[in-house]
Image (cartoon, rainbow, N blue to C red; front, side):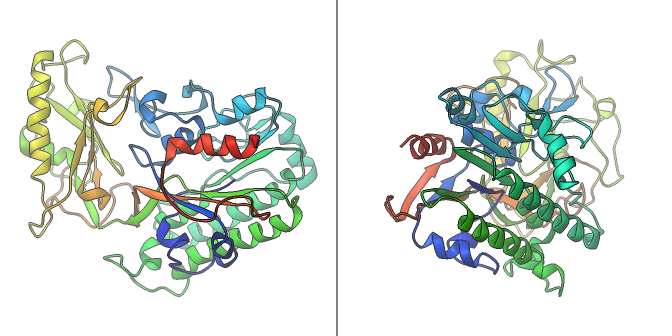
Length: 441
């Protein structure tokens, strides 16, 4: 399974851009789906939702970082937070051998029947990143290198980001060429470099981007990434047994970021959030100490989506909202969110969901509301102090793209035993069942 993080249908199925020549050819003889991703549409929890068959609510995982209950602090989600069995756990118990590379979140590594290299959230090469542990020594001794887990991609130094990105993908492929020679029945490989390329260089690639510009080097960055993967994949198929089935899948799509919207500043304007004193420095982080908790009902986190937290009495250290007041507060906030319009007073498609509206169950510390602005065209940012509510840039470094609701899921059987063509829409948490049927058939 070739996992191309954030690859949109526009690229794979509609042939936008260059670089995926071989993969697009086999797509013509494949079983193809539009993959509808989860709430929220981001890498964590999307991949683990795919491989467990569970929704983020059932997993209790709602993003990369989580709020520590009853505090203003956060922590980064890792494999210890995954309480449900993944496909590699259950198939491994049946005697099948697994190979994993870069699947989020698999750090820290857990025992499997097979081998793994962990994902981009691995803190460093000094930490354990493989199972069995001696795989790390094998890479050091046989390849004289170790995995590059991620790159700095929100940076003004795009030349360095470009070079680091290309080296990371080359590094992954050298290691993969070594690992695929081991014994396995199912190999799952997620390339985070595709997502990083999109965030770094989308405005140079997508001519529908509101700030599109052609650049001799940067406009070829994404096609170069695609080409590296395409060449590697075409060579891989020549090496593997003829009855190998290949899956190409993404965890969500990609679209242009029109701009960003300071969501906590909006909460202040609407009277839901109050500060101890006015903040006029643009890009100021909202911190615990500057909030007037006696007058604050709601605060938010930014990101590709926004998470709203209610200051509920008995749950929060300075809570003021009675439990019987929550229903009315939700109604007021939803009505206010629906009224947010664009910079030219154009209507936006805004959405705000309670956990029970999007999940069958919601374990763990779910946000009180999950909020999307203008169908993911605008990024809600958490910082405050801006003169305008409509900004062109992200507040945490350059970022050219947003995530989107639909990705890709394509199955290629060189022996032609599968039905071919367009099969419609499949939800991300239904993919595990398809993979299991392919492996066990």
